[in-house]
Image (cartoon, rainbow, N blue to C red):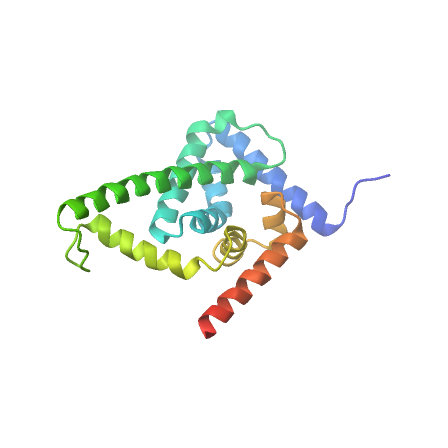
Length: 194
């Protein structure tokens, strides 16, 4: 039997192979290929990073770091038809490194606060403590979403990815991506109305 040549399937295969081709050109030192890859995938990388770190500035920096790392380590990429999975792995690693550093700084700041009397007053403490308080407020607002729901929403809304692209790039069935997206959006709606 022949290959599935439906337009949607052909477009998915074309997108994957195009990203593979761009990564192979980057591997060869082609800066224009990096620019093209950036233009095609930056929104998705930003949305993915934001879904993990939940801080727009951090997500922006992680996105930039991701493309720098792609340039530096393109020789490690093996064209296997899953270029976005490789790119998301790089972004995820940067997110986790950043979260570990932030947690360490927060612990140091909290120790400093306890040694200095233990009272937190908005605007009167170190920038790390102020950022930690703002981050805690943001995290509290997002706690009603699962990480998977947050990822589906951020990749679709902020990353500009279609649901089928999210499924393809994350290796999750389309029905699961759709379910996570709908469930997350319903939770957001209920929380905002409540």
